[in-house]
Amino acid sequence: MRLYKKLFAWLIGLFMVTFQVNYCALAEAPMKTIKNAERDSQFSTDPAMKQNPSNHESVFGEELSEEANYFPFIKVASKIASDKIVGICIKERNIIFLGRPETGVYVYYEEPLKEDEDFSDLNFFREYSELTSLEINRLKLSRDMLENIQKLLPATIRCLIVDSCTIAPEDFELLADIIKKHEQLISIKIKLPGSSADESNAVLQSIAEHSKMKFLGVTLGKISREGCEHLSSVIGHSEETLEELTLGWSSIAAGDDAESDAAHKEIMESVAKTKRLRKLEFSVISISESASAIVFEELGGLTRLIDLKIFFDSLKEHGSVKLFENMELLRDSLQKMRDLETLDISSMHLKGNNMQVLMMAIEAMPKLKILDVSGNELDAKSAETLSKAMQEHYSVTELRANDCSMDDAAFGALCKSLDNSSLVNLFLSGNKIKGEAKALPLKTMQDLVLVDFAKNDMDYEDAMAFVELTKDHLKLHIVNFNGNSGIEAMSNIEKTIKTDQLTAWKLKNKNNVSFFGL
Image 1 (cartoon, helix red, strand yellow):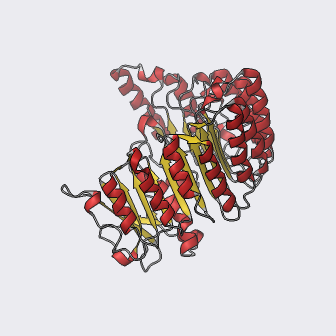
Image 2 (cartoon, rainbow, N blue to C red; image 1 turned 135 degrees about the vertical axis):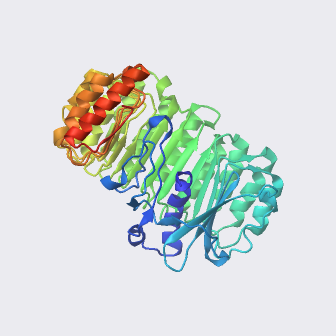
Image 3 (spheres, helix red, strand yellow; image 1 turned 90 degrees about the horizontal axis):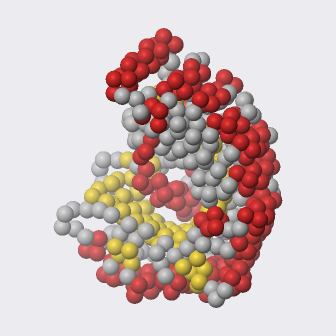
Protein backbone atom coordinates (compact mmCIF):
# COMPACT_ATOMS: atom_id res chain seq x y z
CA MET A 1 0.00 0.00 0.00
CA ARG A 2 2.88 2.31 0.76
CA LEU A 3 3.93 2.21 -2.90
CA TYR A 4 0.88 4.18 -3.93
CA LYS A 5 0.64 6.85 -1.25
CA LYS A 6 1.57 9.57 -3.70
CA LEU A 7 -1.18 8.54 -6.11
CA PHE A 8 -3.77 8.53 -3.34
CA ALA A 9 -2.61 11.83 -1.88
CA TRP A 10 -2.96 13.54 -5.25
CA LEU A 11 -6.30 11.91 -5.94
CA ILE A 12 -7.73 13.04 -2.61
CA GLY A 13 -7.45 16.68 -3.61
CA LEU A 14 -8.57 15.92 -7.12
CA PHE A 15 -11.71 14.07 -6.05
CA MET A 16 -12.62 16.84 -3.67
CA VAL A 17 -12.78 19.16 -6.66
CA THR A 18 -14.24 16.82 -9.25
CA PHE A 19 -16.79 14.98 -7.16
CA GLN A 20 -17.17 17.38 -4.22
CA VAL A 21 -16.35 14.64 -1.74
CA ASN A 22 -16.29 15.47 1.95
CA TYR A 23 -12.80 14.21 2.84
CA CYS A 24 -13.27 14.54 6.56
CA ALA A 25 -16.39 12.38 6.47
CA LEU A 26 -14.70 9.78 4.29
CA ALA A 27 -11.65 9.70 6.53
CA GLU A 28 -13.81 8.45 9.37
CA ALA A 29 -14.61 5.28 7.43
CA PRO A 30 -12.71 2.36 9.02
CA MET A 31 -10.18 0.50 6.97
CA LYS A 32 -7.60 -2.20 7.60
CA THR A 33 -3.99 -1.30 6.95
CA ILE A 34 -0.88 -3.42 6.92
CA LYS A 35 2.41 -1.65 7.59
CA ASN A 36 5.73 -3.40 7.09
CA ALA A 37 9.14 -2.61 8.54
CA GLU A 38 11.05 0.18 6.81
CA ARG A 39 14.48 -0.64 5.41
CA ASP A 40 17.41 -0.10 7.73
CA SER A 41 15.12 0.04 10.78
CA GLN A 42 13.73 3.45 9.85
CA PHE A 43 10.20 4.12 10.97
CA SER A 44 8.39 6.48 8.59
CA THR A 45 5.25 8.37 9.57
CA ASP A 46 3.41 10.27 6.88
CA PRO A 47 2.42 13.84 7.81
CA ALA A 48 -1.17 13.02 6.91
CA MET A 49 -1.43 10.26 9.50
CA LYS A 50 -3.63 11.09 12.45
CA GLN A 51 -1.84 10.62 15.73
CA ASN A 52 -3.46 7.59 17.28
CA PRO A 53 -1.31 5.50 19.60
CA SER A 54 -3.28 2.35 18.86
CA ASN A 55 -2.14 2.56 15.24
CA HIS A 56 1.58 2.43 16.02
CA GLU A 57 2.03 -1.02 17.53
CA SER A 58 4.75 -3.35 16.30
CA VAL A 59 5.73 -1.37 13.24
CA PHE A 60 9.30 -2.72 13.14
CA GLY A 61 8.84 -6.15 11.65
CA GLU A 62 5.31 -7.20 12.61
CA GLU A 63 2.08 -6.71 10.74
CA LEU A 64 -0.47 -4.21 11.96
CA SER A 65 -4.18 -4.84 11.62
CA GLU A 66 -5.60 -1.98 13.66
CA GLU A 67 -8.39 0.07 12.12
CA ALA A 68 -6.87 3.30 10.86
CA ASN A 69 -7.96 6.57 9.29
CA TYR A 70 -4.98 6.83 7.01
CA PHE A 71 -6.94 7.70 3.89
CA PRO A 72 -10.38 6.56 2.70
CA PHE A 73 -9.30 3.72 0.40
CA ILE A 74 -9.71 0.04 1.00
CA LYS A 75 -8.24 -2.81 -1.03
CA VAL A 76 -10.73 -5.18 -2.63
CA ALA A 77 -10.18 -8.69 -3.97
CA SER A 78 -12.50 -8.55 -6.95
CA LYS A 79 -12.34 -6.36 -10.02
CA ILE A 80 -14.10 -3.01 -10.01
CA ALA A 81 -16.77 -2.31 -12.64
CA SER A 82 -15.35 -0.23 -15.48
CA ASP A 83 -17.95 2.52 -15.03
CA LYS A 84 -16.74 2.94 -11.43
CA ILE A 85 -13.03 3.32 -12.29
CA VAL A 86 -11.85 6.86 -11.62
CA GLY A 87 -8.07 6.36 -11.44
CA ILE A 88 -5.39 4.11 -12.90
CA CYS A 89 -1.79 3.74 -11.73
CA ILE A 90 0.60 1.77 -13.94
CA LYS A 91 3.77 0.95 -12.01
CA GLU A 92 6.32 -1.31 -13.67
CA ARG A 93 4.45 -4.63 -14.07
CA ASN A 94 1.47 -3.78 -11.85
CA ILE A 95 -1.76 -1.92 -12.48
CA ILE A 96 -3.80 -0.25 -9.76
CA PHE A 97 -7.45 0.52 -10.46
CA LEU A 98 -9.04 3.08 -8.17
CA GLY A 99 -12.81 2.86 -7.90
CA ARG A 100 -15.75 4.84 -6.59
CA PRO A 101 -18.43 2.34 -5.56
CA GLU A 102 -22.01 3.01 -4.51
CA THR A 103 -21.06 2.98 -0.83
CA GLY A 104 -19.09 6.22 -1.21
CA VAL A 105 -15.87 4.70 0.10
CA TYR A 106 -13.05 4.67 -2.43
CA VAL A 107 -11.49 1.29 -3.18
CA TYR A 108 -8.55 0.03 -5.17
CA TYR A 109 -7.82 -3.22 -6.95
CA GLU A 110 -4.30 -4.33 -7.89
CA GLU A 111 -3.31 -6.80 -10.55
CA PRO A 112 -0.04 -7.69 -12.31
CA LEU A 113 0.37 -7.63 -16.06
CA LYS A 114 0.20 -11.08 -17.58
CA GLU A 115 3.37 -12.59 -18.97
CA ASP A 116 2.53 -11.84 -22.60
CA GLU A 117 0.95 -8.43 -21.97
CA ASP A 118 2.59 -5.11 -22.62
CA PHE A 119 1.34 -1.65 -21.79
CA SER A 120 1.35 -0.61 -25.46
CA ASP A 121 -1.06 -3.42 -26.36
CA LEU A 122 -3.64 -2.72 -23.67
CA ASN A 123 -6.69 -0.59 -24.30
CA PHE A 124 -6.56 0.99 -20.85
CA PHE A 125 -8.70 4.02 -21.31
CA ARG A 126 -11.44 3.61 -23.86
CA GLU A 127 -13.76 1.60 -21.62
CA TYR A 128 -13.48 3.85 -18.54
CA SER A 129 -16.07 6.57 -18.98
CA GLU A 130 -15.42 8.11 -15.56
CA LEU A 131 -11.59 8.06 -15.64
CA THR A 132 -10.24 11.13 -13.86
CA SER A 133 -6.62 10.32 -13.03
CA LEU A 134 -3.70 8.49 -14.64
CA GLU A 135 -0.31 7.82 -13.07
CA ILE A 136 2.52 6.23 -15.08
CA ASN A 137 5.41 5.27 -12.81
CA ARG A 138 8.87 3.90 -13.68
CA LEU A 139 8.03 2.72 -17.17
CA LYS A 140 10.09 2.88 -20.34
CA LEU A 141 7.68 4.86 -22.49
CA SER A 142 8.17 4.01 -26.14
CA ARG A 143 6.78 6.05 -29.01
CA ASP A 144 4.02 3.44 -29.45
CA MET A 145 3.01 3.79 -25.81
CA LEU A 146 2.92 7.57 -25.95
CA GLU A 147 0.91 7.51 -29.17
CA ASN A 148 -1.50 5.05 -27.55
CA ILE A 149 -1.96 7.37 -24.56
CA GLN A 150 -2.37 10.36 -26.85
CA LYS A 151 -5.05 8.58 -28.90
CA LEU A 152 -7.01 6.91 -26.09
CA LEU A 153 -6.76 9.14 -23.01
CA PRO A 154 -10.33 10.40 -22.43
CA ALA A 155 -11.47 13.99 -22.06
CA THR A 156 -12.63 13.21 -18.50
CA ILE A 157 -9.00 13.18 -17.28
CA ARG A 158 -8.17 15.82 -14.66
CA CYS A 159 -4.93 14.51 -13.15
CA LEU A 160 -1.84 13.31 -15.04
CA ILE A 161 1.28 11.97 -13.29
CA VAL A 162 4.40 10.86 -15.15
CA ASP A 163 6.90 9.78 -12.51
CA SER A 164 10.49 8.61 -13.12
CA CYS A 165 9.84 7.19 -16.59
CA THR A 166 12.32 6.74 -19.41
CA ILE A 167 11.54 8.67 -22.60
CA ALA A 168 13.69 8.99 -25.72
CA PRO A 169 14.77 12.61 -26.44
CA GLU A 170 12.86 12.66 -29.73
CA ASP A 171 9.64 11.56 -27.97
CA PHE A 172 9.38 14.43 -25.47
CA GLU A 173 7.27 16.31 -28.01
CA LEU A 174 4.72 13.49 -27.86
CA LEU A 175 4.49 13.84 -24.08
CA ALA A 176 4.14 17.59 -24.56
CA ASP A 177 1.31 17.02 -27.06
CA ILE A 178 -0.55 14.82 -24.56
CA ILE A 179 -0.33 17.54 -21.90
CA LYS A 180 -1.26 20.28 -24.34
CA LYS A 181 -4.23 18.38 -25.77
CA HIS A 182 -5.98 17.97 -22.42
CA GLU A 183 -6.81 21.56 -21.54
CA GLN A 184 -9.12 20.36 -18.75
CA LEU A 185 -6.20 19.15 -16.58
CA ILE A 186 -6.09 20.78 -13.17
CA SER A 187 -3.40 18.52 -11.71
CA ILE A 188 -0.09 17.79 -13.46
CA LYS A 189 2.97 16.11 -11.99
CA ILE A 190 5.97 15.46 -14.21
CA LYS A 191 9.05 13.95 -12.55
CA LEU A 192 11.86 13.42 -15.09
CA PRO A 193 15.05 14.49 -13.27
CA GLY A 194 17.37 13.43 -16.09
CA SER A 195 15.85 15.69 -18.73
CA SER A 196 17.97 18.08 -20.80
CA ALA A 197 17.16 21.78 -21.14
CA ASP A 198 15.42 21.20 -24.50
CA GLU A 199 13.41 18.27 -23.17
CA SER A 200 12.37 20.23 -20.09
CA ASN A 201 11.44 23.18 -22.26
CA ALA A 202 9.06 21.04 -24.34
CA VAL A 203 7.29 19.86 -21.17
CA LEU A 204 7.13 23.32 -19.58
CA GLN A 205 5.87 24.93 -22.78
CA SER A 206 2.99 22.44 -22.93
CA ILE A 207 2.12 23.01 -19.27
CA ALA A 208 2.12 26.76 -19.90
CA GLU A 209 -0.87 26.23 -22.19
CA HIS A 210 -2.97 25.55 -19.09
CA SER A 211 -4.59 27.95 -16.70
CA LYS A 212 -6.30 27.47 -13.35
CA MET A 213 -4.07 24.64 -12.19
CA LYS A 214 -4.76 23.37 -8.70
CA PHE A 215 -1.82 20.98 -8.22
CA LEU A 216 1.42 21.41 -10.16
CA GLY A 217 4.62 19.43 -9.80
CA VAL A 218 7.64 19.71 -12.09
CA THR A 219 10.87 17.90 -11.17
CA LEU A 220 13.22 18.11 -14.14
CA GLY A 221 16.94 18.11 -14.96
CA LYS A 222 18.27 21.25 -16.57
CA ILE A 223 15.84 23.99 -17.48
CA SER A 224 16.48 26.90 -19.82
CA ARG A 225 15.70 30.57 -19.37
CA GLU A 226 12.78 30.07 -21.74
CA GLY A 227 11.59 27.15 -19.64
CA CYS A 228 11.60 29.39 -16.56
CA GLU A 229 9.40 31.87 -18.42
CA HIS A 230 6.92 29.11 -19.26
CA LEU A 231 6.90 28.00 -15.62
CA SER A 232 6.33 31.56 -14.39
CA SER A 233 3.53 31.87 -16.92
CA VAL A 234 1.52 28.85 -15.77
CA ILE A 235 1.95 29.83 -12.11
CA GLY A 236 0.79 33.35 -12.97
CA HIS A 237 -2.25 32.03 -14.85
CA SER A 238 -3.14 29.92 -11.81
CA GLU A 239 -2.63 32.49 -9.09
CA GLU A 240 -6.28 32.26 -8.04
CA THR A 241 -6.44 28.43 -7.98
CA LEU A 242 -3.00 26.94 -7.24
CA GLU A 243 -2.91 25.11 -3.89
CA GLU A 244 0.12 22.80 -4.10
CA LEU A 245 3.36 23.40 -6.00
CA THR A 246 6.47 21.25 -6.38
CA LEU A 247 9.48 22.79 -8.13
CA GLY A 248 12.69 20.91 -8.76
CA TRP A 249 15.62 20.94 -11.16
CA SER A 250 19.31 20.26 -11.27
CA SER A 251 20.22 23.73 -12.57
CA ILE A 252 19.07 26.62 -14.70
CA ALA A 253 21.01 26.66 -17.97
CA ALA A 254 21.30 30.43 -18.29
CA GLY A 255 24.06 32.51 -19.85
CA ASP A 256 25.49 33.72 -16.53
CA ASP A 257 24.67 34.12 -12.83
CA ALA A 258 22.76 37.35 -13.53
CA GLU A 259 20.45 35.49 -15.94
CA SER A 260 19.99 32.67 -13.46
CA ASP A 261 19.23 35.16 -10.67
CA ALA A 262 16.66 36.89 -12.89
CA ALA A 263 15.01 33.55 -13.67
CA HIS A 264 14.75 32.57 -9.99
CA LYS A 265 13.36 36.00 -9.13
CA GLU A 266 10.74 35.80 -11.88
CA ILE A 267 9.59 32.38 -10.70
CA MET A 268 9.47 33.39 -7.04
CA GLU A 269 7.56 36.59 -7.78
CA SER A 270 4.91 34.57 -9.60
CA VAL A 271 4.74 32.12 -6.68
CA ALA A 272 4.40 34.97 -4.18
CA LYS A 273 1.33 36.28 -6.04
CA THR A 274 -0.64 33.06 -5.58
CA LYS A 275 -3.73 33.49 -3.43
CA ARG A 276 -4.41 29.92 -2.28
CA LEU A 277 -1.01 28.21 -2.21
CA ARG A 278 -0.72 26.09 0.93
CA LYS A 279 2.04 23.61 0.10
CA LEU A 280 5.40 24.34 -1.53
CA GLU A 281 8.31 22.01 -2.19
CA PHE A 282 11.38 23.58 -3.79
CA SER A 283 14.44 21.42 -4.55
CA VAL A 284 17.48 22.53 -6.56
CA ILE A 285 20.76 20.65 -6.93
CA SER A 286 22.88 23.59 -8.08
CA ILE A 287 22.01 27.18 -7.12
CA SER A 288 24.26 30.20 -6.65
CA GLU A 289 24.63 32.17 -3.44
CA SER A 290 22.85 35.16 -4.98
CA ALA A 291 19.98 33.09 -6.40
CA SER A 292 19.41 31.32 -3.08
CA ALA A 293 19.30 34.73 -1.38
CA ILE A 294 16.58 35.78 -3.81
CA VAL A 295 14.52 32.66 -3.11
CA PHE A 296 14.88 32.93 0.66
CA GLU A 297 13.86 36.59 0.68
CA GLU A 298 10.87 36.07 -1.64
CA LEU A 299 9.62 33.23 0.56
CA GLY A 300 8.64 35.89 3.06
CA GLY A 301 5.65 36.75 0.88
CA LEU A 302 4.14 33.30 1.29
CA THR A 303 2.63 33.85 4.70
CA ARG A 304 -0.32 31.51 4.07
CA LEU A 305 1.83 28.39 3.61
CA ILE A 306 0.95 25.35 5.72
CA ASP A 307 3.58 22.94 4.36
CA LEU A 308 7.11 23.91 3.21
CA LYS A 309 10.06 21.82 2.07
CA ILE A 310 13.32 23.44 0.97
CA PHE A 311 16.25 21.44 -0.37
CA PHE A 312 19.19 23.25 -2.00
CA ASP A 313 21.97 20.70 -2.29
CA SER A 314 24.75 23.14 -3.18
CA LEU A 315 24.44 25.21 0.01
CA LYS A 316 27.25 23.10 1.46
CA GLU A 317 29.54 24.58 -1.18
CA HIS A 318 28.69 28.22 -0.49
CA GLY A 319 31.04 30.57 1.35
CA SER A 320 30.53 30.55 5.12
CA VAL A 321 29.87 34.29 5.47
CA LYS A 322 27.37 34.50 2.61
CA LEU A 323 25.67 31.28 3.73
CA PHE A 324 25.23 32.67 7.24
CA GLU A 325 23.69 35.84 5.78
CA ASN A 326 21.36 33.75 3.63
CA MET A 327 20.30 31.71 6.65
CA GLU A 328 19.32 34.99 8.30
CA LEU A 329 17.20 35.82 5.24
CA LEU A 330 15.54 32.42 5.40
CA ARG A 331 14.97 32.77 9.15
CA ASP A 332 13.30 36.16 8.67
CA SER A 333 10.99 34.74 5.99
CA LEU A 334 10.11 31.67 8.06
CA GLN A 335 9.17 33.88 11.01
CA LYS A 336 6.38 35.37 8.87
CA MET A 337 4.79 31.95 8.26
CA ARG A 338 2.65 31.78 11.34
CA ASP A 339 0.27 29.20 9.83
CA LEU A 340 3.03 26.72 8.96
CA GLU A 341 2.33 23.17 10.17
CA THR A 342 5.11 21.23 8.43
CA LEU A 343 8.68 22.42 7.85
CA ASP A 344 11.26 20.23 6.12
CA ILE A 345 14.81 21.55 5.71
CA SER A 346 16.45 18.12 5.71
CA SER A 347 19.67 16.97 4.03
CA MET A 348 21.20 20.37 3.28
CA HIS A 349 24.33 19.63 5.38
CA LEU A 350 24.05 22.90 7.30
CA LYS A 351 26.54 23.41 10.12
CA GLY A 352 25.58 24.07 13.72
CA ASN A 353 25.93 27.86 13.56
CA ASN A 354 23.59 28.06 10.56
CA MET A 355 21.11 25.70 12.19
CA GLN A 356 21.16 27.84 15.32
CA VAL A 357 20.04 30.82 13.21
CA LEU A 358 17.24 28.87 11.53
CA MET A 359 15.97 27.29 14.74
CA MET A 360 15.22 30.76 16.10
CA ALA A 361 12.33 30.89 13.61
CA ILE A 362 10.51 27.97 15.24
CA GLU A 363 9.29 30.03 18.17
CA ALA A 364 7.38 32.26 15.69
CA MET A 365 5.35 29.28 14.39
CA PRO A 366 2.49 28.60 16.83
CA LYS A 367 0.91 25.92 14.60
CA LEU A 368 4.01 23.92 13.67
CA LYS A 369 3.41 20.18 14.06
CA ILE A 370 6.10 18.40 12.03
CA LEU A 371 9.72 19.53 11.87
CA ASP A 372 12.38 17.69 9.88
CA VAL A 373 15.98 18.83 10.38
CA SER A 374 17.60 15.50 9.45
CA GLY A 375 20.90 15.59 7.61
CA ASN A 376 22.00 18.88 9.19
CA GLU A 377 24.34 19.34 12.14
CA LEU A 378 22.86 19.80 15.60
CA ASP A 379 25.62 20.73 18.02
CA ALA A 380 25.01 21.71 21.63
CA LYS A 381 24.15 25.36 20.83
CA SER A 382 21.81 24.71 17.92
CA ALA A 383 20.13 21.80 19.75
CA GLU A 384 19.48 23.99 22.79
CA THR A 385 18.11 26.78 20.57
CA LEU A 386 15.75 24.27 18.95
CA SER A 387 14.65 22.92 22.31
CA LYS A 388 13.85 26.38 23.68
CA ALA A 389 12.03 27.36 20.49
CA MET A 390 9.82 24.28 20.68
CA GLN A 391 8.97 25.12 24.29
CA GLU A 392 7.49 28.43 23.13
CA HIS A 393 4.29 26.86 21.78
CA TYR A 394 4.30 23.12 22.58
CA SER A 395 2.70 22.42 19.19
CA VAL A 396 5.31 20.15 17.56
CA THR A 397 4.11 16.54 17.56
CA GLU A 398 6.89 15.09 15.40
CA LEU A 399 10.58 15.91 15.34
CA ARG A 400 12.83 14.22 12.78
CA ALA A 401 16.49 14.69 13.65
CA ASN A 402 18.13 11.72 11.95
CA ASP A 403 21.80 11.90 10.92
CA CYS A 404 22.43 15.19 12.71
CA SER A 405 25.84 14.26 14.22
CA MET A 406 24.33 14.68 17.69
CA ASP A 407 26.63 13.48 20.46
CA ASP A 408 25.74 13.19 24.13
CA ALA A 409 26.40 16.89 24.78
CA ALA A 410 24.10 17.97 21.93
CA PHE A 411 21.38 15.50 22.91
CA GLY A 412 21.54 16.65 26.51
CA ALA A 413 21.06 20.22 25.28
CA LEU A 414 18.09 19.15 23.16
CA CYS A 415 16.47 17.50 26.17
CA LYS A 416 16.72 20.61 28.37
CA SER A 417 13.37 22.10 27.40
CA LEU A 418 11.44 19.09 26.12
CA ASP A 419 9.58 18.41 29.37
CA ASN A 420 5.80 18.77 28.99
CA SER A 421 6.26 18.98 25.22
CA SER A 422 3.59 17.80 22.78
CA LEU A 423 5.92 15.39 20.98
CA VAL A 424 4.36 12.14 19.78
CA ASN A 425 7.11 10.84 17.48
CA LEU A 426 10.83 11.49 17.99
CA PHE A 427 13.29 10.26 15.33
CA LEU A 428 16.97 10.28 16.30
CA SER A 429 18.50 7.62 14.06
CA GLY A 430 22.08 7.83 12.81
CA ASN A 431 23.49 10.06 15.54
CA LYS A 432 26.21 9.53 18.18
CA ILE A 433 24.03 9.31 21.26
CA LYS A 434 25.28 7.03 24.05
CA GLY A 435 24.60 7.27 27.77
CA GLU A 436 22.68 10.56 27.51
CA ALA A 437 19.66 8.72 26.08
CA LYS A 438 18.42 8.64 29.65
CA ALA A 439 18.38 12.48 29.69
CA LEU A 440 15.11 12.48 27.73
CA PRO A 441 12.52 13.78 30.24
CA LEU A 442 10.17 10.90 29.51
CA LYS A 443 8.17 11.26 32.72
CA THR A 444 6.80 14.63 31.62
CA MET A 445 6.44 13.80 27.90
CA GLN A 446 3.06 12.18 28.33
CA ASP A 447 2.03 12.10 24.64
CA LEU A 448 5.14 10.34 23.35
CA VAL A 449 4.38 7.20 21.33
CA LEU A 450 7.62 6.47 19.47
CA VAL A 451 11.34 7.08 19.99
CA ASP A 452 13.82 5.99 17.33
CA PHE A 453 17.41 5.56 18.63
CA ALA A 454 18.52 3.35 15.70
CA LYS A 455 22.14 3.48 14.51
CA ASN A 456 23.59 5.38 17.45
CA ASP A 457 26.58 4.46 19.64
CA MET A 458 24.71 2.91 22.59
CA ASP A 459 25.67 -0.28 24.34
CA TYR A 460 23.19 -2.49 26.17
CA GLU A 461 23.59 -0.66 29.49
CA ASP A 462 22.89 2.71 27.80
CA ALA A 463 19.74 1.29 26.27
CA MET A 464 18.57 -0.30 29.52
CA ALA A 465 19.05 2.99 31.36
CA PHE A 466 16.47 4.43 28.97
CA VAL A 467 14.25 1.34 29.22
CA GLU A 468 14.01 1.93 32.97
CA LEU A 469 12.39 5.30 32.27
CA THR A 470 9.52 3.67 30.39
CA LYS A 471 8.07 1.81 33.39
CA ASP A 472 4.98 3.93 33.95
CA HIS A 473 4.59 5.66 30.60
CA LEU A 474 1.02 5.19 29.39
CA LYS A 475 1.37 5.91 25.67
CA LEU A 476 4.87 4.90 24.64
CA HIS A 477 4.60 1.93 22.28
CA ILE A 478 7.82 1.77 20.27
CA VAL A 479 11.50 2.31 21.10
CA ASN A 480 13.95 1.36 18.36
CA PHE A 481 17.54 0.45 19.28
CA ASN A 482 18.36 -1.36 16.01
CA GLY A 483 21.86 -0.91 14.63
CA ASN A 484 23.49 0.55 17.75
CA SER A 485 27.20 -0.21 17.58
CA GLY A 486 27.62 -1.35 21.18
CA ILE A 487 24.61 -3.66 21.06
CA GLU A 488 25.54 -5.05 17.64
CA ALA A 489 29.00 -5.93 18.97
CA MET A 490 27.63 -8.37 21.54
CA SER A 491 28.05 -12.09 20.91
CA ASN A 492 25.03 -14.28 20.25
CA ILE A 493 25.35 -15.75 23.72
CA GLU A 494 25.35 -12.27 25.29
CA LYS A 495 22.35 -11.26 23.19
CA THR A 496 20.41 -14.33 24.31
CA ILE A 497 21.17 -13.63 27.98
CA LYS A 498 20.24 -9.96 27.66
CA THR A 499 17.05 -10.77 25.78
CA ASP A 500 15.98 -13.10 28.58
CA GLN A 501 16.79 -10.39 31.14
CA LEU A 502 14.71 -7.84 29.23
CA THR A 503 11.80 -10.27 28.94
CA ALA A 504 11.89 -10.87 32.69
CA TRP A 505 12.07 -7.12 33.32
CA LYS A 506 9.06 -6.48 31.10
CA LEU A 507 6.99 -9.14 32.85
CA LYS A 508 7.92 -7.82 36.26
CA ASN A 509 7.06 -4.23 35.35
CA LYS A 510 4.02 -5.05 33.20
CA ASN A 511 5.66 -3.11 30.40
CA ASN A 512 4.07 -3.30 26.93
CA VAL A 513 6.59 -1.21 25.00
CA SER A 514 8.15 -2.88 21.94
CA PHE A 515 11.95 -2.54 22.23
CA PHE A 516 13.43 -3.30 18.82
CA GLY A 517 17.09 -4.23 18.61
CA LEU A 518 17.35 -5.55 22.19
